[in-house]
Structures are given as structure tokens and as C-alpha cells.
Image (tube, rainbow, N blue to C red; front, top):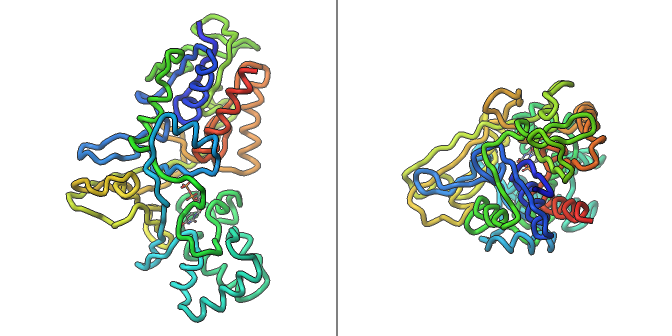
Length: 381
Ligand code: UDP
């Protein structure tokens, strides 16, 4: 009856389902949660403020095809997202850029250091902190040490429970030192929010006569991998399965759990116009939470009465009931464990793993949409 079964209805699952349905397939989407949209899920809280239930998701891309694809399902509230770090009460632009340099060193000294940095790396460069720290020039090394200590070390310890040296350089490299006066967090061509929110976007994407969505269904109740056969509701299923969940859970974590970092999101509402006057403040030298997001500034609800914020408290995922795995912890050991699980599915030529969880990767929204479109096209061939 179905050509494909897609497990999960987040950015990965919804995109692949839609692309397959557009090509004429009948697609069944099974979603464990009671709602679609995965961790992009947003909804109005009881005060009417649109909140991101699973943490702030800011869309940004340079990929024209991704932007065009998503634009079929949403208009945009486009803006240049800016972040500041609260460093002992002073607000410094992040990524650390030439404006930050001025704030920290004063105009005169900063001008001198700027010349040095530009001569070394060139205007507009994006220099990962771990690279900057290797620079033998003592003046550049001193800047690197400042940035490392005041922007990266404590935030990373909170977020990952490890130092920047201990985590994958890919992760700190996401927020490089930026040799320009551009205060935006991302430099991508398109950035902003779906105008009616992510849930509405994915709802429209899944709204297709070829797509059936079943929520509150744990796929393990109806889908089994036995020998080299895929069974759906007890019968052999010869169509395609795209799985976007955690792979260890498909096999009852028989080799042990894949490690993840999780987050405890604590929401607070204030009957005031504003809490921090901006969308995101990172706490890079103090506090137990990593950052505070004030949603109205992210979603274009500046005029709303009252304001809702969220503080993010990271912790090690244990798999306990109610915990959510958010970030794969990228290192050799964990990736080897991941490959062991993924290898178990290699015998099933009709099963594909897709997304942050299923691929054990750190994907941005645009990257996973791109990958999902490519996968659907590959499946159709
Ligand atoms: N990071 C940091 N200080 C900051 C911002 C980022 O140390 O003020 C590091 C930290 O290790 C973080 C990583 O850079 O996990 C990636 O940051 P990003 O903002 O991309 O994280 P996400 O929004 O995906 O949680």
C-alpha cells in the first residue's frame, strides 16, 4: 500500500516524505511524538508568545535550492541574527569580530591589533579559535587566549562537559573569530524565521494526498528488521524505509547507548515588554545555563504583550524517560560505536539513515534539508 515509510517528521523526515510524494509515491510517516516538526516544533505558549519547545532554531542558508524548496511552504521573517556574550556584565558581539576587538582593547590598541590580524589572515577571514591559538606571534596569541578564556572555555565546559581541546574542532569551528565588522552570528545570504513558525511550515509540507502521517506511534511497534527482511505490521515490506531516529534504539542499545548531550529548557514568562532587549545572550564566563533566548525578538513578535524567555541547562543524556538526545558527541570512540549500529542495517538495501540522530551528526537545518532532497532523488532513481 505504501511505497515508502519515513520514521520521524522533523526537517529530515518531512522533507524526504514530501519529495517522495511529489514524485508520485505513497508515503507513510510515523512520528513517535504527539506532534510533527521534530526539534523545530514551535507553538504559542499560554501567553500567546511563539516559543521553540526544543530550543531556538534560526534558519540560515546560502543554498538557493534549499531556500526555494522551503519557500514553497512558508513566507519568511528575514533578519540578521545577532548574539552577544555576557562577559562579567559587558555585552560583547559573538562571533568575536573586529567590533568585539575594539570593545575589549579600546580604539587605539584595537587598531594596531586589527592591522596585525588582517595582515596575517586577510579581511573577512573566519579563523577557528583552535587555529588562532596556534599562532606563534605573541600579540595574536594573547588575543586568542582572551577569546578562548572569555568566549569558549566556560561555555563549552557547560555545553559539552569538556574543554574545547577535548571536543571535535568542527564544533568550536562553527563560531570562528571573524575578521570583519559584521555583527551577525551567521554570514549566510538568507537568514530568519518561517513567518508562521516551523510547525506550520512542516504541516504544509506534509499536507499532500500522497502522505499519511501517524503521530504518537513508536515505529518499533510495527516495524522490525529480521534477518535481511523488513517487516511492517508483521508482513514483509519491500518499499523504502527512511529512518531519522536514533539507531541504537532500533537495536535496544545492545552495544551500549550512543552518547549525546541533552538540554533542560526552562521557560519563564514576564508581564513586561522586554527581558533582555534582544534575541540571544550567551553566558560565556558565568551561570549554569549557556544562553538565554527571548523569543519575541527571534520571531518578529516585538509588539506582543509580555515576553517569554528560555534558559538552556546542558547535561549528559542517559536515555531516561523524558530525556531528549540533542547533540551527538563527535569523537572517534562514539563514531565507531555508531558505525557498529549503522552496520547492522547494511544488509537492508531498502533502509536509509537520515538526520542528526540517525547519522550521528551535527546538522544545521539547511544542510539536512539539502541532504533529504538528495536522498529522495536517489531513492526515486
Ligand atoms: N561556543 C562557545 N561560546 C559561544 C558560542 C559557541 O564556546 O559563545 C562553542 C560551544 O562549544 C558551542 C559551539 O561553539 O557548542 C557551537 O556553537 P553554536 O552556537 O553553533 O551551537 P548551537 O546553536 O548549535 O547549540
